[in-house]
Length: 127
Length: 127
Image 1 (cartoon, rainbow over the protein chains, first blue to last red):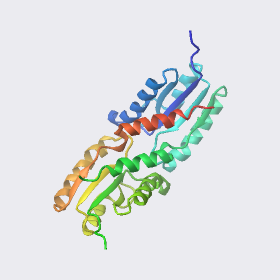
Image 2 (image 1 turned 30 degrees about the horizontal axis):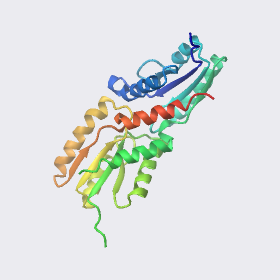
Image 3 (image 1 turned 90 degrees about the vertical axis):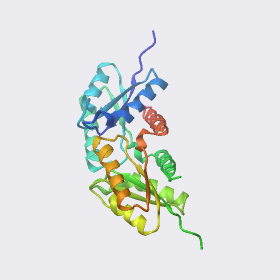
Image 4 (image 1 turned 120 degrees about the horizontal axis):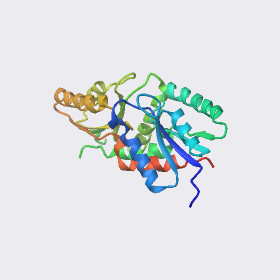
């Protein structure tokens, strides 16, 4: 038997009532699971769809995961997510003192995203 | 004198009252302008901040641009953007018959985005 990983990743997105809205997030999840089957990766949402971040972190804690990277899957990040999310992660760190939670910068602020979006957008030139 | 381009790109995003929210979109814009100075690239927003898509297309028409690629800068695309945006582009095509408007798929549905987001998210593993 192999030891289950104690590391996890949460893809944290805004959420929508529309199930199609979640498809890109779930495509990233599926790809990560295919590439790294031993890594525990989950989606969680700020509002309008389940699961939320607290229940996701609780489920990971129950599974013995002790280190969780939380990745905000936002292109633009408004005050809501910018202020609410760090507070939420801080509260979860207090509620689950055995866990180490690390909040990444919003994915849209990564320069590789900027470069790729510029490349894809340039392809939209009408031929 | 060089001929001004008749091609343009609109980076179309949701919009937010928070000016910081727009930074990633504006970073893509700045990068495209730096890489292709002859190409007319603009940001436009669905709601909560200016400019909107109709005034952006009108401004491009006034400038002599006749072909415009419209790129939805959405990771997840809800019913709102999925249904409203094609209708808006259709109405603009009728209002500006001299222009050719082409609506791209939402940027978050591009497989290169999925792959890059999976790679960036995997780096969020707590060391």
